[in-house]
Length: 193
Image (cartoon, rainbow, N blue to C red):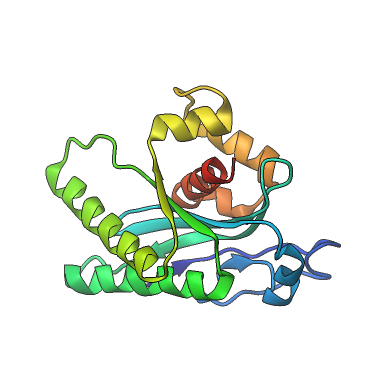
């Protein structure tokens, strides 16, 4: 049905003032500011799901990663599953066209006790991987343990520890109140590192 979006406070490097963002734009640095990042990788991290799919776009590497977009794609619960998958595919395709990333990363489905949820997440991941393949983008997968170890330093870190490290590495953002966007940022950081 839409995206959960956030506002970015202005800063000397990005905006001169607070920027109001439309749902289609999400939380981001304006495209004209992206030109200065042409020599460093742009990575899209995702936390796939059929109902909610978190995303984060970062630029940079281990020395200086910067968040340029984050949010959550939300599909309508009562919609046909095929339409929901199409919504996710179109949303990721818009991100790819807008930011021209060098790679995309996904969190690997690790364990699900609810089989129907696991199937829905697997379908969403498959559609997102197809979008990457059509865009000729390398897509990497990481287990939750690998993401936790890379971002927080240990594989059993809880969500609070991960979010604390995300804030330290990427700065404070209202996006981190959303677990899906924060998880996607952790995945993006894992592939950037």
